[in-house]
Image (cartoon, rainbow, N blue to C red; front, side):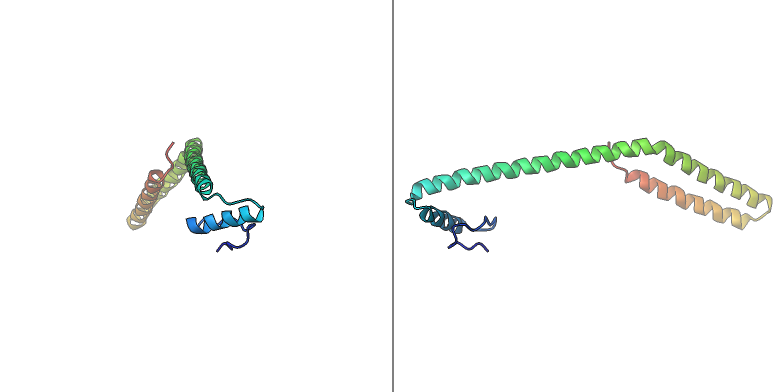
Length: 135
């Protein structure tokens, strides 16, 4: 909480208008100036407008940075996609070869288990692709 009796006290974003007015009056009195309440209210309106403009500018800056981060993540995903697909195709091939060997050995249960594992992998990859960042 801001100490309203100390003219050098720092700004508190949660102070009420009355607390802020008292703080400004105290600062004017400490500087040896006469307090003009009408001028003080006008200054407060200007300060509020400036504070709102700063907040709006900050919000738009954050939004534009967020959009740029999303765009760059999407671009990274695009650039990494060929390597990801190559690795997935390598894994698919390995599963297919293992299933073929299991069938040759008449291990139909083992081939079925490998087929289920491959299906689970494909489902996992589909979920990863659905969650990818948009470009």
